[in-house]
View (cartoon, one colour):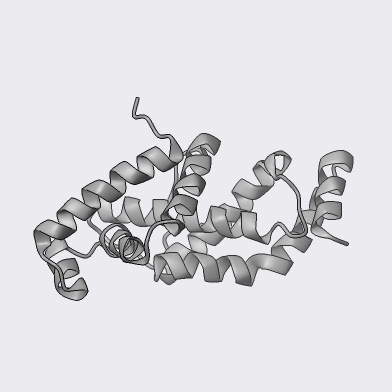
Length: 175
């Protein structure tokens, strides 16, 4: 049975137990995507679980295609980023074995994160690297400057320009 057929059966016939086929097919792949983002097993596991829950709750929003895997991996990636952000804001690392609780799922926020991720991929490689180091790996601007052989002020200017460019690319306007 294809992913599209499974999802059609779930949505049209209420055969919710079929979602376990999707979980079985893609759990390892989705976990790898979350792990690539989080570099933390606990966060990756939580992001994987949340990705499947969010995908199930929003199956009607999936646009179809050959595989639901890219959709699941994008949700896992974005969820892992959210969990990492929450962990860094609390200034404490997640405790092994303790689930991280997330607020209610926001589809608009998910779409915005998806657009942002796609826009980042369109940036020049050095800008992508700066974004990865600064926002995802939480590396200081001084360390980024050292790693990329540029001045710290250049890194700060580039970060500002990258943010402006990304806002323009995704059409983001702050409330």
